[in-house]
Length: 325
Length: 65
Image 1 (cartoon, each protein chain N blue to C red):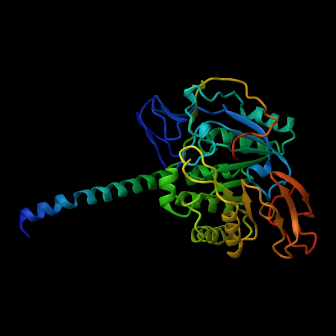
Image 2 (cartoon, one colour):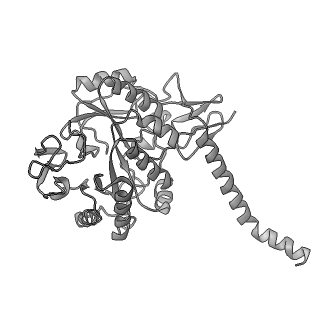
Image 3 (cartoon, each protein chain N blue to C red):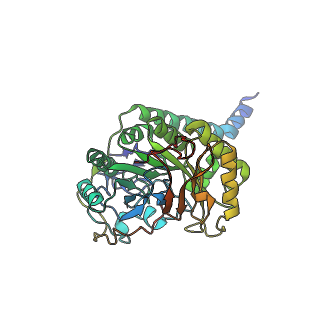
């Protein structure tokens, strides 16, 4: 008997024995099963700035995990060795980590939050959901790092337990999503709007790829959409591309391009626009949108100074959007 | 229009009609799915790949994100 997976907009229909596009959801004798539940292939304690999240518990450590698999097939994927792997290939080993063990490890490593990241937590949805629920009950916060390619119902159910999310907005055209990622734009926009509406702390990342989405008008459109739909207080990260996977023919993004993108983002009224994946002095720091004074100074993923006082600018008292404790 | 011309026209436009019909069917199926209650996937009893302890947990991951 055929089954249909209704988790993401791909809506894969699978014959018995067949898996979906994500490679980790499979039809076993007419029953839809997840093969990666409880089997992460990677767990690490990362700085939260690496997600990247700049307005959520800055300077804290976050227990970060992933299973193999992804519902997108981005030609530029930086983690393609795990995101595009089949569990049965034998190339990527995994270990049994039930949700309870994740909670215990968060405590052991002094991590106030758990990140479902590296690949896409949507494809290991049930594991993410159960772990997030348990973490929430234990007072540990949950962070998703995702492409946001998910259907409304499962997304809404998961958001109940999510505190923060960094969601990729890869470009503003259906053509880009189709050609580069094997996906579509509209569901991602819906996921962003829904997360914001549900009170989740949302930061947006746009990977700027030379010749594909780096034109000033493309950046402007993305910044405008972010401001109009998510608000001026939403942090936006312009990330540098490095040649990898199936996109080794393009050069890395230059610092000048990312600085231009940042300027465009701010000129469109966004209060917090960052540069990532490349060393940048001003592009990593948080400044007060009111008095323009430095609030959080960063170097790479490290915090050099945090001048916020109870989430406010110490100079002008302006409230800075974020989760600070 | 003669019957022959009509049949020729129909043959010419057939791919367009087919694409349109398939798009409508896909949209209807997506609509139907949105109304249905989301059903979780069940767990597998066994992981299909190799099992090995994960190392260097307390160190920063090499993966992006």
